[in-house]
Image 1 (cartoon, helix red, strand yellow):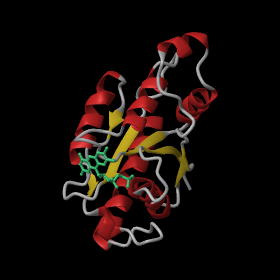
Image 2 (image 1 turned 90 degrees about the horizontal axis):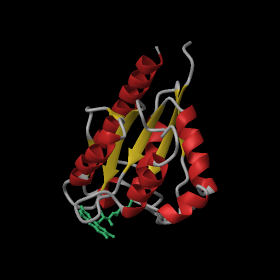
Image 3 (image 1 turned 90 degrees about the vertical axis):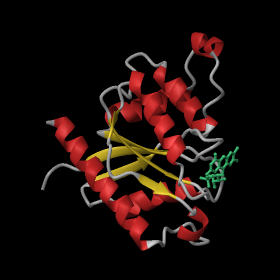
Image 4 (image 1 turned 135 degrees about the vertical axis):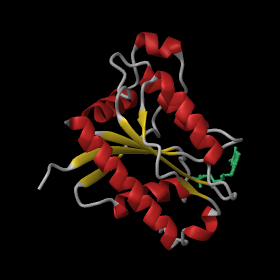
Length: 185
Ligand SMILES: Cc1cc2nc3c(=O)[nH]c(=O)nc-3n(C[C@H](O)[C@H](O)[C@H](O)COP(=O)(O)O)c2cc1C
């Protein structure tokens, strides 16, 4: 059997009970057996400040940068805040983008997101694609997984229960696995 593909998954919401973190957990559950998703921790990232960077990168930034560099791909799960990505996700990307040998370049990257509105973070996801251009992220185009009405698709324990959405998430993980495997060749 082929090597396991290693992915770092990042949720753009820090709140307990986040639908986006729940979607990340669903991706872990629904990934094919040869795709392993480790959750990247952005909870300890300070607000970006070039003065802080000039002294030293925070340990949490260095650690996640190393994890992303060592991974075969990335899964970014974004909420939609005021029609864009959440501030904490943008802040994390900003920090990581300033690392020497920034870790996003050439990395196969899947996007997913959930919101309680009908569009399922679609606007945020397209902003995220724009953010990734200069960073040379290699976004998967399809399937697009935009989980609208999230409060109706996850149960109280955070399990994704909506069968068509489970299929989309599983298909996205297969596409990410295949893209990451191709990039390794
Ligand atoms: C500051 C803020 C702005 C928001 N803006 C949007 C928005 O533009 N579109 C949308 O669909 N939902 C918006 N919401 C609602 C979020 O989609 C909802 O709170 C969602 O549950 C956040 O993701 P989470 O569950 O992973 O924390 C906003 C929520 C907050 C707190």
